[in-house]
Image 1: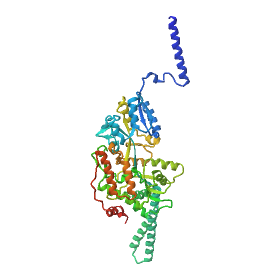
Image 2 (image 1 turned 60 degrees about the horizontal axis):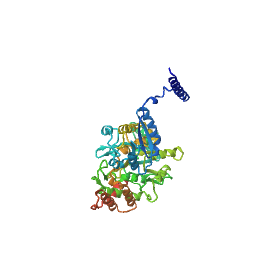
Image 3 (image 1 turned 120 degrees about the vertical axis):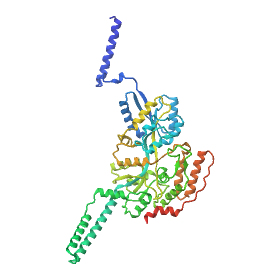
Image 4 (image 1 turned 180 degrees about the horizontal axis):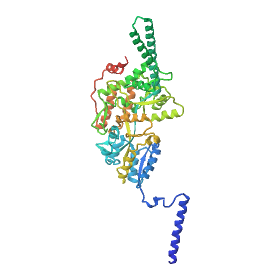
Length: 508
């Protein structure tokens, strides 16, 4: 062996020893670090704008990377300002563009037409209605194509103070027991005064009846009995809340039986959601728009009439105040989104809330008019300009198949699919309400409808004419859709007395 070869050999041995020392100091063996023998992984970058998702996405990125030796997931928190424009710019000009990004379903048409969304792999096979609610599937459907994955959602429903309703149930049952005991005592006294006027058999029969009445009257009130009475008193429609308000013996701290943010369309839309059509089932067809019709006018009249029963000041109300009033026990019923669960639980943990609460299905308006709430679905979109579309699809499916409940535990989001293990049954109720909700439409031409409806609701709450106000909203939107001035034919005004009767007839 010549001198040159011996020197090279000594250098290689020295390098090996140095490497061994480094790994020894880190309590690892060079033979345990398989990463030095593997090729570089494909990186799937996932952009998102909501920082509350960070713990969950980071956790799942690690889990996916560990289970998949070929793909590394890199969550990237970015600004929500001009989000799609930033996705587009990065995809064209930069190397660190997103392969996958999260966006609300109402922006999907814009993303698809810009080439930033693509039809997902095996969409019809993967998005089964046994796994994903109808609203979730509709939210990501565009022109018959599935162009995103439903990730998590937000919607609103009825929240009630369970403690108040349970106390009311106990009072009702105790009153019935007291009445039964009084009737039993009276029957016993009547039997005693009758003396021997009745034969022995009759006396025996009366004694048995009195004993049964006494036994029933003295029965213990169980939690099951309380739950049954509470369920019977949950309102099926708004007129039931009015009926409840008339008979409810409210505690001193209660300031309102029913309070909600009358200025926010997200908490008001259920009044017209069952009868207003904006874009069809998938919210993607401008040929299916029906805002101004007899039913929506009637529903808005019902909405306006509620101002007589629930004096809510539109100039001072806001959602945060409503939630705080509910936490403080000042309100029995409210309309809220899923975020209220954490707010109440946090308040209870800090000793600032002594009440139990629960979520119920969204009530109808009257026996004649139903309701349907609105929802927004946050979607995972595979970038149409990505070079790693196949890998991005797999990552999206991994996230949308997570049944652990970690998405709520770590980020307080509710997944847009069935089968998730939540510790709170109220979340399951929200999922059921979401399933029948109206997804925000995707059509670009109707993007400002919600702002116009919000203004219209406030005007109507404050007393402006329902018919003409809705007509103006429809004409404004149809002008945008058609590209030319649009005039609606004025519809006959629904009869106020009939609508009023429908709202209050159960309370007479």
